[in-house]
Image (cartoon, rainbow over the protein chains, first blue to last red):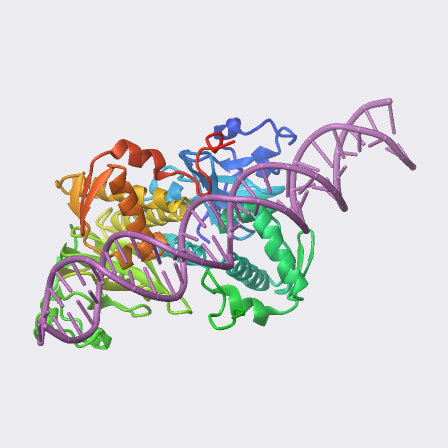
Length: 234
Length: 234
DNA sequence: CGTGGTGTTGAGTGCGGTCAATTGCTGTGG
DNA sequence: CCACAGCAATTGACCGCACTCAACACCACG
């Protein structure tokens, strides 16, 4: 890590956020309450931020006010790499829960030694591209396929963090999940209920336990439209 | 431009391509016939390529063989920036028409002067991210909205090239367009016919003339589902 | 002239969206 | 401690958009 921690003293580009219940001074220490924005779309930011704890979502808003969730960000992720190339943020980033972030100072000296962060930033952007392509691909499938794929992917992320791959708590609301997967919240509910009825998983509010990953994987990438041709009743 | 033109002598990672009708030696000079691949997915490539003439599409293929078109690339675009960070390509790139490309040599000297291409590559990747987010956002709208948005966007690209913004020839087949916009080819046909019947444009095979950009813009980002609420009968 | 690829158009249907009612959880005040 | 309001999530009813299947038109080939 060549980045250096700053005391997180952004002047006040966050003033637009609702006057949340957070204690004065909490935000300056990098604490965000649920619903508070880390960045707003179009903002010019100083530093990328490392997420210490909590969850954030990044989203864009279309001309009709509909929000399109681009991604969820967990502890260890870095958001706001636009700071490193002097671009405005193209999406808003908001806390889904109480969240702690850390501003990362980026060395700006022109005479950069060989591979300090440069490759890191590039590979970070490259991974972002891969993530978006993956999301784009998901969008083409059926709603069941999208939800199944999301749950499996989320399980893998959890596993990478040393948590259970099959037993986890979704940190985001149905609405956010729906906006991420491109469907209605009711459809999320229905699909989860369907999976539960088939015995593929158990659902208790946001607590998910995967019971049959094989079946989920089976339909994870299934195309929309009618199911297996030849299987439908006459 | 700090890139240098190479005589395009890729050994033969392209051998997998179908034994196209191209003359021997044509490909070595950077000429691709319709259907020939510039890159295959998973390939490790040496240099990014500048497109001189023609059109390419980049795509990924899901586990069911369905291809998902990520983008179309026109003269002036650069594809294959993975070469600069030593990554494998994540998507295939194939010519939609006779195409001429140029391999760009990338200086690898560690002591890079200040801003030779570094920012260029990064901003290139950043623009790719923006493009993907835009595409993702489009996917949420109705089919009419997606086609309208595509035509308007394509017109703008044409205008940037000094061509007519309202009168152009689409270089890709209906199938590719459908795969790009996430719909069936029949739907593309139907939407274009509908636009034509409404007098918004004229269609002659791939030759499009936009006659009412305002109307197209109106529905460009319209959400799917029923039309204007309050307008439906009773 | 036959043939295959590509685009258009029609018929039918199912997935998933909207609308709406109900349930359950949470926090707040009496 | 309970009543109530407010919000999130679930479930049901309905229906329209877009997909599949199918037939046909149109070129560009040999």
